[in-house]
Length: 174
Image 1 (spheres, helix red, strand yellow):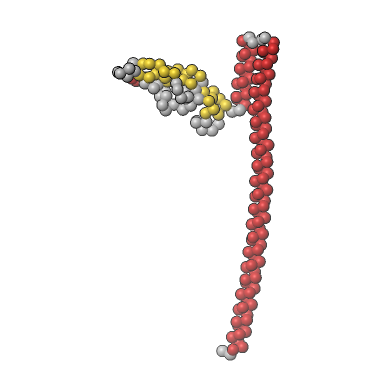
Image 2: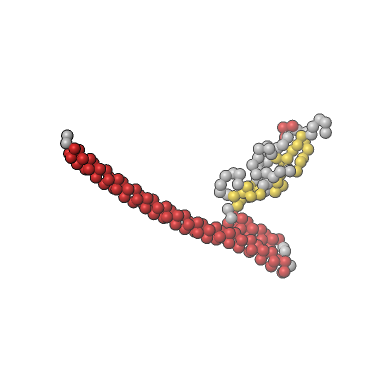
């Protein structure tokens, strides 16, 4: 094979490689621009979602606080008017129930006779009732105050645990 034919083929191959590298470089640059453009769009959407969420959260807090302000006004009216009768207190209780309901909070009561050690949503330091019956040991005897939890979410989403009394068996040494 003559040298000129070899160099001509070499020049063509080199030209094809150069064109191919140039096209690949151009494709990579376009891909990079597309990626940057998509990332910018995602960043803008994330910022917009964050702004909307902050506004939504602020509105929820505003509604929450407004309901308790109504209760405060009702208490002030009852105090100033000297009208702390049963009907007024009942109305204030209804306002509080409404405020809690609007916040997604519900009252709950653990089951009487449930084992205190495994009961969900009970406060520490229960009132103790001594018993001789070992079968009643650590069983819930009574609900002193109901608990409150968020209606939605897991069972363990307790706002305020219930206060209970439990049976505690006397030991032979006590």
